[in-house]
Length: 76
Image (cartoon, rainbow, N blue to C red; front, side, top):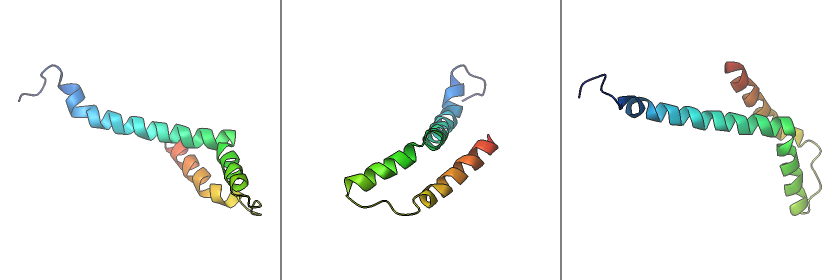
């Protein structure tokens, strides 16, 4: 197979495009959830669903996620 044939671009770069798309979606979900407070709302909903009192420091659960989202945001 010769290089430069028409239609080979997607075959060569298809998986890269797909993986970058998945990475972008994950970043958008993490950043969007962090910015809008959806992770905290989900945590509170789970707490209410199981009838437990909220723990005094549920915020510490989200610190690693926020740190990772911040680092990924800075890389882009």
